[in-house]
Length: 321
Image 1 (cartoon, rainbow, N blue to C red):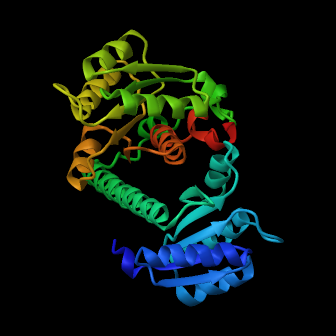
Image 2: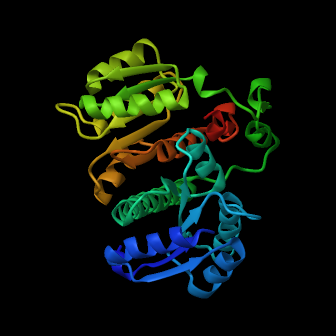
């Protein structure tokens, strides 16, 4: 991504805020900046300029930021595109994270953020988005390979009966799903600072049972003793890395007919490493240091990947903040 070539739209009802952002971003090399003071002007600017990035103030009269974002996402869906959207808020409570997630924003920043911080956020969003596109492509390739290798089943009554889906257990019909407080997580990271950061995010999510392991073998031992509902795994660890740990977890789970959602967290921004992680069985991928917003999105996606109909997958995680 070439920051200098971006087209950016700033949406804020306060003239001072719009101009401050325009000047701050201009000093960082972004020159193609448009502004709008309300949702109507913003939607017209989206149609006219097709901005790559939109900064949206949360609190605006008549149509607020989250409602505007939902309208922009509808336009994205029509064009099969994805505009990077950052929700700007003065709210420093946990509600800011929840509002950003529920609105469809890619990320959120406090309103006092300067140009450099905004650019760092844009680059982070872009890296995450490209990583997710690669994941989708790899999953589609695997799906196509599986479909190509499957043999058609003869249309006999026995085959039809065998292919009929079993009725969903009563517990699986609960669309609310369990809350994060009911779940257990094994967090694997050999760096104390990173582990503490992830622990704080898990506390924010209100996951009460968080077990920390400093290396892969310790994590595997904990999982074998008491399997976790999901795992956060660092990529780079001494002796046994996150890829090998994932393979060992998958082997252990297969023998017991279970599947543990795994989110890999790494400082290595390499597309090759993403491919290695997916092939090993990693469900989702995040770069260090992850925000609570991105971590929750990836945890949600990991649960949905295994069993979309389960209560765990159907739980709206943002609502628990």
